Image: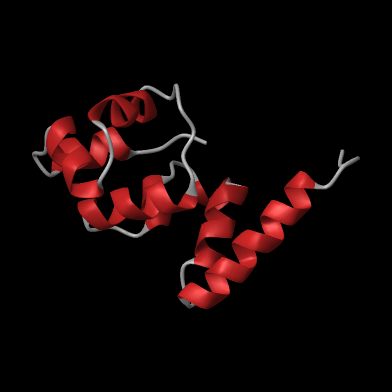
Length: 100
């Protein structure tokens, strides 16, 4: 999944350090995200989006084609309790033996 973090960060005149601090992340992790060397989870994507003042789906390039964007769009409006249920369900599915 390609992200627009660097583009949006620069458009807001923020350094990597500033954005990392605002999102509660390390600068090295943010650098790796911007260089597409790390993947991102929903919580970190939400933190970066909040820091940039955008919706998480706005961080994704080509979001209309991305299954990740669809998941985020469905996940965002849920309450915290509902999000926790969905995350537990997904973790159960991913950790099931014999999944292909």
